[in-house]
Length: 327
Image (cartoon, rainbow, N blue to C red):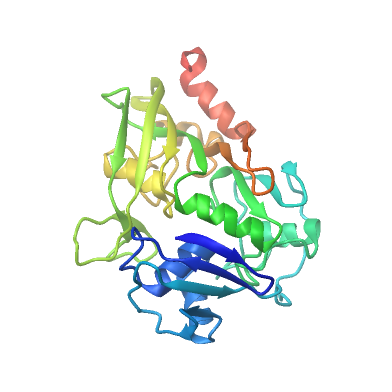
């Protein structure tokens, strides 16, 4: 997808040979940083067109097709600003980088109508958030799980959002996590390259999907061992995980798929160890922290890099398990 023109009211994109054959709703979602359902709504309303004409969401695109995405002013939101403290790592007129705490949901959803990062951002930034994500996800370029801590970047206007979303799609936003996995990794480093989709039975979970008849998306995680330990009869490994893609629950699913779920993760089998039973106060959700984030700044076009230390609870957990053995 190549951006060829930016107008005041619309973003015009040209379909590349690489993207030919994709559905309109899929490519519009990827290019615009939208959910598939949000892209569908814009297609049905005529705000996304192909070669100047309204098209079906399942239209298979051809190289050279021109897609127009109408950029609306942000809608009046029913999501209310809330004065919730934010750990702001960096902020300028284009974006804000937040170190999200464990337990905070990124945006309102069923069961979490408020108290989210979006509520806090609306209070902190006012109207200075991009509208591409809609009224529920203003400014949100990417997400991290509720029980995962760490860095994420939020866009303050649509141009920045589109620029960052294109980097995300092209695997050019570098996201590095620290994780504690159950069990001993035999190798010192490796890669899990396995597609991830919705679990075929438990729809609240994700899973590695190898059946071509089921929906799944490419997912690649690179890992490196930082330290190994044995405690209370259980083996544990401290990992550095780098995302090449960014699927829902990716690191959690990939580690579980190779027999090493993350410590404290009841969804994917990382709970129930004797260590956890003995040290319950150290376990605050899955042991996963997004500690490094780098990308090209949308205005300066220079690489920017940010880091955030592990939260105190996870740092204490790591110190207890691995002591001075960490790299």
